Length: 377
Image (cartoon, rainbow, N blue to C red):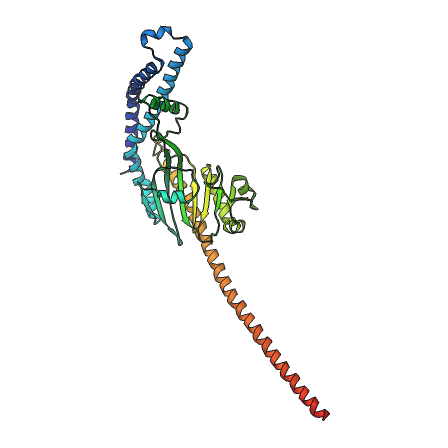
């Protein structure tokens, strides 16, 4: 598919969306209106014949709440419809831009897959959740450092209380009214996290649990201590939690800290990291589905792909820093290994010379004593 065809597809979607909004509003008005009238009349025990008996304040509140629920529901339906109608366009966009760009670099791209839940839970960076999703899994290897990252969505399912269907509806209405953002994707699933999740090999020896947080605490902060580095900007943006201060300082090289600051400044969103066993885990809290085209931007004049590809390059830079560190640590390992051998040989030589000299001088002293005894006799 060519760029011009993609742009035509985008414009057709916008035309359909404009017409469909009127139908959506009408359908939403009918559904919410019928449900709300039934609910209010059953709870307040009145019919429209008794409407004149209600105070003006009660009338105002009933109408006000109705329109609030109507607007929130309509906006939610519009958002869901936009995601649904633009699904094919977004897939074509990724096939045209993302896939060739990633595969050209020698990496693997899987549009409909994401990092598994067991890895997400193990990193210790997220609150409890029982439902996960995501897309755009990218994996590969740079200079021996294996990595993968993807968009993830974490939610927590809530079992609604029910008493003949009335309390459930009332409970849901209140939650939807005051906490509509929490029900972001699906009913009765509280939204916990949307953003990027990155995992890579870490070639330093990790004997601690070390967390670098910018907007929250680790999942479990028991027995963890706060640490400061000698980098002022890093201390300003992050809080370090660890159970081994020496190992934490060993992990955080100056190049790695600068790279972390650069990624945070590039995305301008909270960034959290953990170092566990042989892995580094990074969350980039973008609060959106990344690597997606903006339906309202012209593909030819605005070039939304440019920003997406720049974001990808920024994420891949962390792998390059890790691979550079790997070579540095490998060199020091070889150097230290050679130095240890030299030290061992040196100590062996000292011991050998020590015993040789002791033996020699003992022999000389014994010889002199014998000569003295002969002279005396």
